[in-house]
Image (cartoon, rainbow, N blue to C red):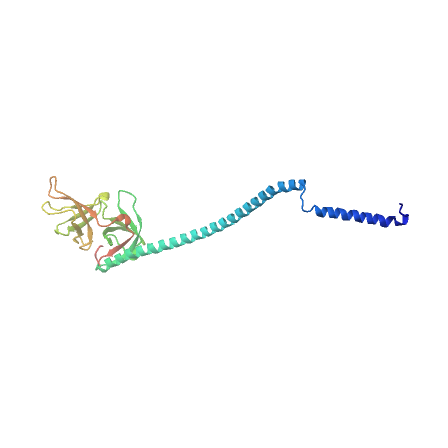
Length: 275
């Protein structure tokens, strides 16, 4: 049966509507199913997505670790600097304490002396083997004169042989040109203590009949008027009576450790002495 021409548009519209509804209904019924092509796409995408996520997570973790390590390095640097500052302060205080102890010993020595004294620092020591000397930071401006005796808390150091305005050179007890009147404390036998360089000193002109033993203490006798009587010079280390002659050969170790000498006292004799 033919449809009149005037009804064609409504019929066409109705047919299109029916077809559209049928397609929608078919599509809705297929939503729960996945096509083969879609399955292939999903199958290939899953490991790629996983690898990308793992890589991004690893990169993120690495970045976090880097920032942590940078922060730790900065903290360590600050701590090392702080530790260095504290160590320097501790060393400074320790050095001050040790110096204070040395100066206290010098003050105790000063209190036991009747002479006026001047404290001085050792600023240099001779490197040559010919002369054994030290340089101190006090000179004629401080009352220093040639011949003045020089002491440490350990004992006799030597005597001044040269002066400037603010410095003096001291000939050490162990120099070969040094000669000091000495006596053995135990027996009171008297002789001359002469320097022997690196070997220490020799106590000369002690009679062979005198009993001298290793360990005997040697003091200044005060006879020449340069060094006051009773100052510690050294200790006898070896005695020999072999060979001919009137005197014994006596080796003496100085009481002062000249390699560690840092501060000294210069004795100023009574008016008229030492000039």
